[in-house]
Image (cartoon, rainbow, N blue to C red; front, side, top):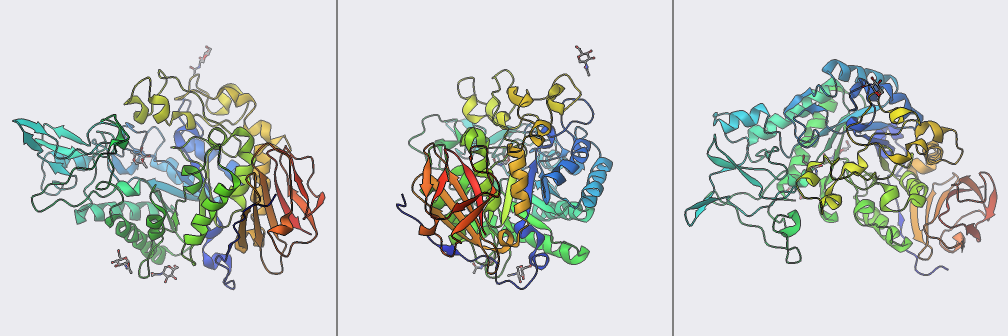
Length: 576
Ligand SMILES: *[C@@H]1O[C@H](CO)[C@@H](O)[C@H](O)[C@H]1NC(C)=O
Ligand SMILES: *[C@@H]1O[C@H](CO)[C@@H](O)[C@H](O)[C@H]1NC(C)=O
Ligand SMILES: *[C@@H]1O[C@H](CO)[C@@H](O)[C@H](O)[C@H]1NC(C)=O
Ligand SMILES: CC(=O)N[C@H]1CO[C@H](CO)[C@@H](O)[C@@H]1O
């Protein structure tokens, strides 16, 4: 049964003596991502808004959320649904007013839920005043963006480099007014800010200061690796990027290897600078720590640098996408174990681990890894050490919704074609939240919603799942309650695969009960001997959390040396 087992014990922040509050509330926090367009609509226009979020904060409390990060709510022409910011200081009227935002902060404070905002530094909207003034050549803003007159080949004007946009086609768009090309790594309506201009860096730091002083507890920084391009050479030109030979579509982003437009070394330093702003505001305002969460799909060694180096602190939470990017429906338990170890074993010893299993850009857990693994994955997420990040709807087991080409609105897909959009579209994970079995799933009073609602909303919704003992929601809530145990907050972690089908994690702390999460990720009945991989277990273990595949019930006992698992059964046991 027990073939290869990876037994490395990771000591986390448990040079205990400081209390958790002193260590930082965020170190064991449960973060929840709200996609405001799709969370709750309060004004009947079919699009979610801030008052909707405020109305539902009690639900976040119910599922034990510590802090919630909101996808962008700033003024935007919505070419990329708010990831194209026109004014970094204003709330878009679609989501409400500044007063609505203040009310949200007040209510969140009453409920002790921290609000985190999405910060989109990679670009602004082309409708941003900064861009308009830059395009007009105004001295102060002239170099706020990346401009180039292009090169002339055989008498024909061409963009300065071959760089391809994430949304297909050239990264350069000609601007008639300025008579130059501007750079955009994403949509043409999202010109890249020029971070080699110190005034831009300062302007963006001011944005951070503004919202922190208003009362937000930090930021999730979007698309960090794209912030810098390679520096121009002495003639003011940039190199072309090399081809990826295996991709044949010259419009496709993966046609080129992005060695000059992503993960430039300056990016890390910028994150350290943003952290200094956070720390300065901590010193100015006091109270609980403010935090930076950074989104970067980058190699592990680069991600570890985001945490900080010997002289500088960085992002407290560099998103760990190992279990999003590198696991698929066919992955075995060794693979899960290896990816978990990758993070734990490479992380600086005084930092906190984090685990992200979903977001607004990724296929949902139930669709990506199998609907019958939803509880198992949530168990993993909530019993691993450190910080958990849940995307809205994953706690009730929402799955990807098929959206036809006609109904598709995601620019990443709309810029492709009817054959390819399904591979690119992120609409299926952004559909309205399913609150109840009522009209429009209780999301809105409108007759239509900005994206179609899932067909399964009468079965998969908060109201119904509250009443089912072993629903995804109730299992999630039980796991959340378990996270208050000191062992789960501060304990050691040991992760082992017991053969290809069973993954086990043990959390332990001297003088406390140990907790063992055991997941049968496949469809055979398995009998495992936990004594073979974990030491110091009591001979009998108690079931603390079970899922609907289990034949055992909560509080039943089992022998540690013969735990029987049904297909896809996922359980948490404790020593007795
Ligand atoms: C740490 O980061 C700072 C700021 O980016 C940099 O100047 C310094 O060289 C780095 N130190 C080490 C040891 O890498
Ligand atoms: C990083 O932050 C921690 C916690 O706030 C602090 O104790 C430490 O001195 C900081 N390290 C550096 C290099 O600034
Ligand atoms: C929704 O549709 C019903 C029936 O077609 C109609 O009576 C009602 O006015 C519509 N509501 C809105 C908000 O458009
Ligand atoms: C990784 C990534 O693409 N992140 C964001 C950067 O900005 C674009 C364009 O606004 C967003 O769509 C992405 O989510």
